Structures are given as C-alpha cells and as structure tokens.
Image (cartoon, rainbow, N blue to C red; front, side):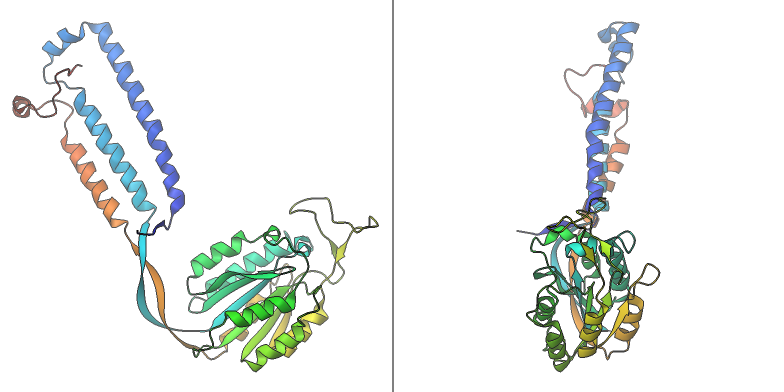
Amino acid sequence: MFDVQFANIEYLYLLLLLPVMALGFLLYLRRRRKALQKIGNIKTLKALSPETSTSRPIIRAVLAAMAIALLIVAVARPRVGSKLKETTSQGNEIMILLDISNSMRATDMYPSRLESTKNAISNLVRKLSSDRVGLIIFAGSAFVQVPMTTDLKATDIFIQSVSCDMISEQGTALGAAMNLAIKSFNFDDNLSKAIILVSDGENHEPEPDPIQIAKLCAEKGIVVHTIGVGDVRGAPIPIKEGSKDFIKDRSGEIVMTKLDETSLQKIAQAGGGIYVKASNSNSGFPTVYNEISKMKKGEIVQYAEFDEKFVVPALFSLILFVTACFVLKRKNRWIRKMGLFERKDDNL
C-alpha cells in the first residue's frame, strides 16, 4: 500500500467550500425555476425555446466542481512513497539538546525561555542546510524528538511543536540527555560531530554526571557547546504558559529558577566547546554557529525525497475545466438531433 502524504495539507480545508458552492447552485436553480413559473407554464415555455436545457448547466457545474477539487488536491502537493535521490554535500552532524523542564516557562526571556529558544533554534536549523540535525528534548528524562536527518523542514516543524508538557517526569537530567545524544551519532562516517546543549543549567539528576559525559564526548570527537537560558537573579515559574499564577513550594513560597552558568561553563570546557549566555537581544546561537562552521566537513551522499504526484490531479483538473467549457448552456442544433446530454424528463 502506498504511503500518501501532503506537503501542504492545510490547503485541503478548501474542499469544505465545495458543499457551500453546491448549495448555492441548487438555490439558484430553485429560484430560477420559480421565476419561470411566474412567466408561464413550463411545458409551454419549453416548446417556445426547444434549444434551452437545464441538464447542461448542471453537468457543467459538476465538472467544474470536480476540477476545483482536483486543483485543491494538486496545490496540497500529494506525495506517494519515497525514493532515494543521490547528492553530494559537505556537512556535519549536529544534535541539539533542549531543556523543556517547567523552569523553561519562566518569562525572564520574552515571551518565555522555551519560546524564545525555539525561535532561535529554528533560525539556526535554516542555516544548517547541508548538515544532519537531530533534536533531543529532556526534563527529568530524555528522548529523541527528531533523529539525525537532513530533512530540516520537518525538523523545524517538530521544534515548533515542543512544549513543557511533553515530558511528565520533571527535573533536569543533563547527563542523561547528553548520554542519549552520544548514542544518536553515527560513528561509521567521516562527519564532524557537535552537541548544542540549551538549558538554564539547573541539574536535578546527579547521575550520570554531565561533566563526565562531556569528557566522554570529547574522547569520541564530539564537541559540546552550551547555551545558558535565563537570568542569574532568578525568575518565578508560571504554572502553565501565559499564566500569572506561579509554582510554589510546600511552605507556600514562590519557587525561583536561576540560570546556573557555572555548571554550563564546566560542561562546555570538558566537552571542548564554548559557553554562551542567551539574552533577548542575542540568542547565543549565531556564536555557536560560527564555531560549528569552523569544523571539518565530511560528505553526505544520500537523502530521502518523496515522489511528488501533484501533476496527476492538476492534469485531470485541466481536462475537466476544458470539458466543462465545451458543454454549452444551450443545445446545439446538430447535437440535439443526436440526443446527447438529453433526458426524457428534461425541463426548463
């Protein structure tokens, strides 16, 4: 069975307009028939105008509706199955580790730590057009949100869908996320590898030790860069995104989350990378990108590409439009003799 997907699936909502158009057309026919009944008897009018037909406008409308439906499907870009297209590009493997613990809801960065970071990551991914990029999200535990891929458009979609509610186990397991990143790399190729750890640095899980994992990364040739998100003075944590109610401890005091720059600096130093503090005016990602661009690049020779099939519905749509144009509103004298487009109960 073919795996059919749509590159612009949102355009399929336009198909909902077709029933509305059909209802409008039926109301028009009903109103027209009532207007003719006021003029005189339908059979009499038919005898006076033998070349007039009501079936032809209906046929034209049906053909036009089918053509519009197929055109909408074509614009939505149906893609069937997949094929491998060989290409050669120079790139690296980059794994982004994004902290989505509750502390990332803090608004000491606009509009929040997480939302600000997501936008910055999207901008970075657009620049990494020739690289393999992956995404790991973590809180009290970590999991791979996007495996290493060259499909950066899909990666961006997954980045924008990330929220603090995606992991119920709260905390900040920096070491676990970095350990998972190591397992996600392909060490059989000749690509340079880097980890970009984005967090406020508050590590609630002492094991595995993120500094020791960073040293292990360096031994395996993986450079670890860290980006600190938040304010060192601390900020309250909203209960949910946009809420004015804040998380409180058992004594009823508002919990404050602070950027731990020291931990992130030590991780970057152990991993052979750099530490950058993010702010509203500087996300830190351009600085990290400059470091990544200095890395030796290797060859990426294949990527997956869907087989586009939008031409098929577009072609049939054109055929139906042309056919509709040739169906005249009035009966042709010669065709009428042949009985085409006729019905026995054809009325005005």
